[in-house]
Image (cartoon, rainbow, N blue to C red; front, side, top):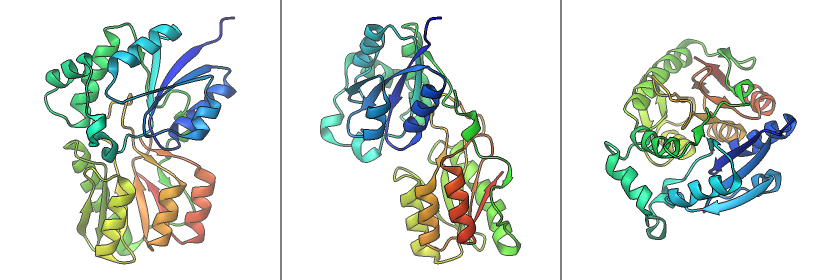
Length: 270
């Protein structure tokens, strides 16, 4: 039987590594096209082959896929906006310029939809980010022993509502709330920086929430939370975090839940 082959367009973070481990378990060959500036040594080690490109080099990405004779691609990991805004990274190839001109604006959804159209026009199918990893999505309800009560429960409900509205506008995914007040909302800085900023204003006992878009396209930008963020919430003395069940990856779940339980911090899936 011919071995299944898939390519991963890999940004930063641990999500590409989790995928590569799942692919190995299923005997699927995974070729990684890594985004320059976001290289993960673990992903490089696990890849059957590894190529490095600038995020704006759509022509090169398509060329590599054709060279590898792979027509299935998964987008995984993040691209830090500090990398996007570096002058050397703003040079676009012709395909990238065409994509930008077609996009209604430069928010994530319009831009990614046009990139996917460009890839599909070359016979490349973009798979859901959840491919092979449905088991890593956050469950509904409390992930551990700690459950929000009283003021924390009200803040959990409110923060999730506000995070959903932020995601609907395609601005960010994360908000920080305390006593019914939004003290921070994510834009370009990323989840952890938003939480740090919110904690500085709110002090201990705040609630963070992370939500997907109302009609989230699972092929890109699916929310992720992992042990690094849980440890940050512990350090900043948060009451807990709310995530969207079934549409948020909860990575390193066992360690994350143990850390949260020891810190009396809730992880709630909504």
